Image 1: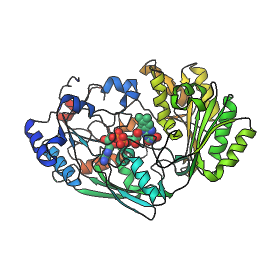
Image 2 (image 1 turned 120 degrees about the vertical axis):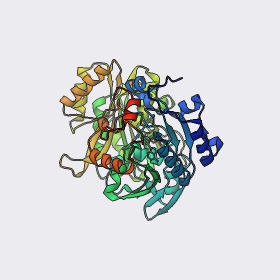
Image 3 (image 1 turned 180 degrees about the horizontal axis):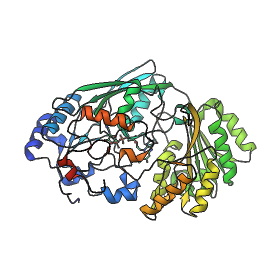
Image 4 (image 1 turned 30 degrees about the horizontal axis):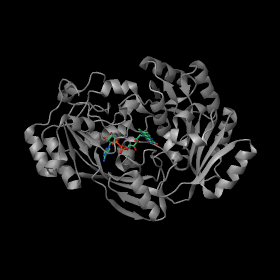
Length: 472
Ligand SMILES: Cc1cc2nc3c(=O)[nH]c(=O)nc-3n(C[C@H](O)[C@H](O)[C@H](O)COP(=O)(O)OP(=O)(O)OC[C@H]3O[C@@H](n4cnc5c(N)ncnc54)[C@H](O)[C@@H]3O)c2cc1C
């Protein structure tokens, strides 16, 4: 059980009663074990964050099932100066939904209505699980442009507030690329919460902001025409040949695709449910390609001496095996289960990615296992379209300093690092608009009560500063 930090902000019994009056008795949780459970996400991926955030939790948790309830809860929290941390599926792995100084957790998974699906655009509440959203849009002939590998548990609001890219990004790029996030409607954190509508490029101010600059109540997202996807697993004993084939598919714009994952042989043993398709000692590729491309790719892989171990449709509703649930950070998850004492990094590589990765492994022998995802991103001059190999290596955890050393060496090779071992927004990745995100926070959260401490660009009040942990 947690040890309360100095300055921990408690929710008083009188406020608990008021909350019960708003959402009902059952929807307010105060028992320490229940609040503790609702105060944690997948932060333990990082041993650094595990150590720092383990003792952090809210004082009480509230589950809302209507926007009117959410408004009333925010107004009450504002009146009593209570910090508020919003929670979706809690699959974020940077401790984004761990309250740093107590207060309230608001679980928004009850805001789960899909408002409309029309002309390639879905309008939805934030608490809808991504898998359900994908199913609903497919029924109308569309599909999501980008899915996290956590699509079963993640909410769409949490993905937009805490995620960045995923299955589909090899074609459509990350979530922030034009046309994907069309509109975000937020509630402000004020005496009378206002509805704020941000459209087009403006909406990005609230994207990937960890719930620090408004609470999302509605999203409008651009969709793609639905395709019939095939899943293909290709393996081979030679890392060079397997890598070359993955790159060949990733860089070929003529192949309609939404997943190209490339993994070293060392991952194979951890993927227990897939073992029969992964010969020992083979590196492997997961592909999801349009069914029209399958026969040609299978023939080409075989002609190159590679082993095609699995070809099956991506079935709807989902049926195992689902290769996409063994890519992105799910690959990391399976590896961490099999290899305690390991962790991961997130590195944006250049076109010479194979060489850069080999240099990393040579500098830290035996400590780095290679896993790439290919995404479409921007060139140094800002044009969209460049294919970027993203390395999500599983790394033996020696110490925080050792992780820093690996990152610094990677950077010296021209590799970009998005640090997954920090819960602070501005330390996690590239600056794609921190100043605009902070400006929005100043407008909508005058007391700085939304997820305090996570956004460094806005000073917190002296009272909250006292309550926040010293590792800031
Ligand atoms: C195994 C594994 C695989 C993953 N794969 C991917 C991947 O492929 N791509 C990817 O981008 N990420 C991935 N992630 C990270 C995570 O799954 C995504 O960020 C995810 O979509 C978050 O959704 P969630 O509902 O769980 O959000 P949560 O963890 O509940 O919340 C994330 C952040 O959003 C805030 N938030 C939630 N709802 C709202 C709201 N309505 N308004 C304002 N703020 C809100 C929270 O306060 C928190 O700061 C992975 C994580 C794990 C553990």
